[in-house]
Length: 200
Ligand SMILES: C[S@@+](CC[C@H](N)C(=O)[O-])C[C@H]1O[C@@H](n2cnc3c(N)ncnc32)[C@H](O)[C@@H]1O
Image 1: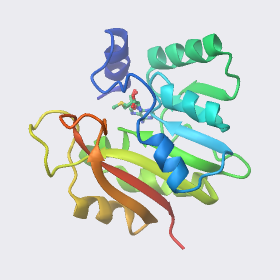
Image 2: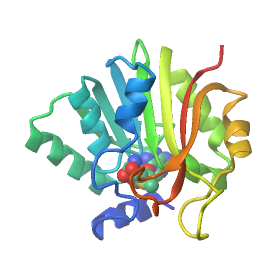
Image 3: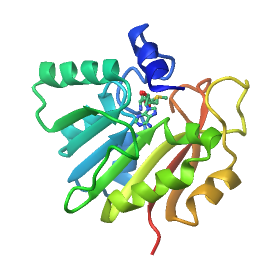
């Protein structure tokens, strides 16, 4: 999809991928991997609910998205909630993101990385994630899973082998968990929770 198409999805109303709230896996991922609040980045942050959750958790968070309408909504939400620790920007990953001096302690992406299989840009994406991470930084992404998927629509679906083949040359996978996009809804899209750090 082009930047204009993404923006159009938000301008038309609630897009189908909208979580309604912050990403449901986020609290567990932060707790299980003992991720201490620092600097965070949400890539393809959409309307910003997960980034705002991270700010509430204690992170200083940057959210980036190519869709200006989504970023406008995210900024309004931050202003309404009085949250100052979130910086929302219109921009494209990887080219529009620079590394802060000490890197990011936590980088997340709900539903963007998995789309890139179609454009074969996954290597470039993960190289940039590794460049941006602080030395002990953690990356988390939620991806569509092929096994158990009931229809061919939606984003590209990945097998476990494909996930490992994309990540393992570049990163150390710390968790690869079969779950769902909405963990409490057994009918929601099967997903992979992937948590990784830079390879040693
Ligand atoms: C499937 S949506 C997920 C949005 C959000 N993470 C969520 O869970 O609601 C993918 C998002 O990535 C954004 N996007 C697409 N390509 C991008 C790029 N190259 N850089 C930054 N954002 C991008 C889209 O505008 C869209 O908001």
